[in-house]
Image 1: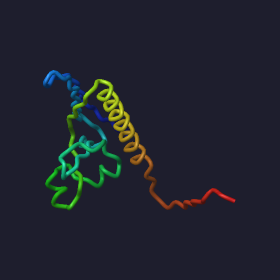
Image 2: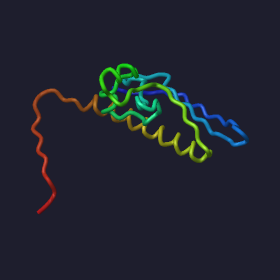
Image 3: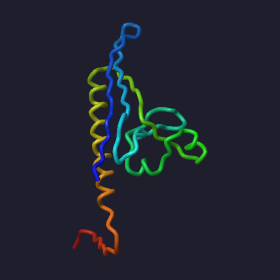
Length: 129
């Protein structure tokens, strides 16, 4: 199964009190084989926390109120904005987000392909003497 996620990345520079502010806005705009709500937010602070992991995708709801009602600390959303003091920070952040999105897409595809019906015998051993 092919998994795809398309994002829209908007980068702008604003000047506040004579100081440049580098803004990044990222939104999931299309997907196939994965939900678009791939950004995790903290319920208490309302701030963006991270790109979701496979665990997050299955553990956290897409609505803040659903997370609050379930006593969860996080929820997922499909867009966020962040501000930075320098172009270097904004660029680094954007690159990390893109890398983590690629990892999430690859992990989602691997998990959907990895499921094998039937019985398997797996043995795990420590490395040692």
